[in-house]
Each structure stands twice: as C-alpha cells, then as structure tokens.
Length: 136
View 1 (cartoon, helix red, strand yellow):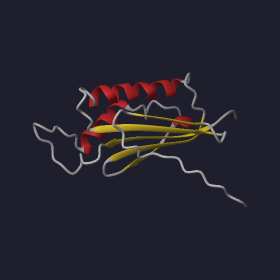
View 2 (tube, one colour):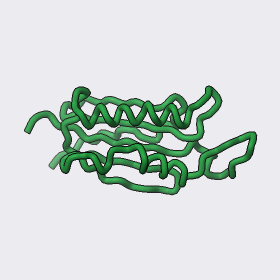
View 3 (cartoon, one colour):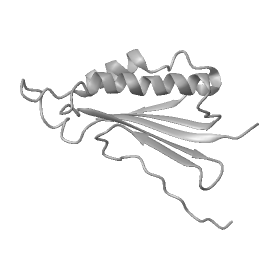
View 4 (cartoon, helix red, strand yellow):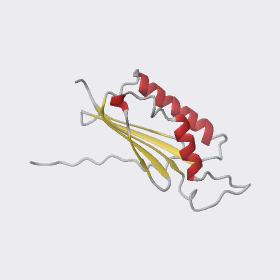
C-alpha cells in the first residue's frame, strides 16, 4: 500500500472577524465570502475517489480531513492543494495589514517523528497534534 499520512487543512476567519461587521476602515470577511472562495478554488470535485476529503463547516471555519492518503510533494493533488494556498494568500492578504482569514495544514506520517505543518502568516495555530501512549 505504501507510506500513508493523515492530513488536516483548515481555512478560517481570524479571531474577532466574525464578531465585528465589515466597515470601510476595517473590511473584514464574513464567513459566506470565505465559503464562496473555498467552493470556487478548492479541488473537491476534481479529486479522484481516494482523495475525497471529509469536509466540516463550522461557524468560522472549513476543515478538511484526509485519512490514509499518499501525500507526497510531487503528487498531482498535493501540488494543486499547495497552489490553493497561494491563491488564498493572494485573495486574503492583499497587503501587509490584511489578515482577515487564515489557513493551516498539518500532515502526520506513519513514523512517530514525521509531522509537517504550514500556515499563513498570521495564523492563530488552531490545528495541533496530540500524541498518546496506549496499552491494549
């Protein structure tokens, strides 16, 4: 079967964004705009059957869960997803002061020390890894 990973990707509104309506001085993004961007840019429909992510929608976030996938940098789907992060940055970070929305990605491989994470510049670090020791 090859080396497998579990991957979580989250797109979310920056803390405080959801509480304050947009104004001319503070053009915050409502969740509907984030969801619209996601629907137009994330490769959910183009993904092959084994790449279908479980998608969870919250009040201020969109969480994708990939379990038991071959997540290699050279893979077609992985390259498309990484391109989505560039589009996200272009859309939601048009200048240095604009941090209305964020993304994070965490990948856990089969080996205990194989953990990768990446995020946008002003991420709230809402994704984290918890390891347990279990005896059965």
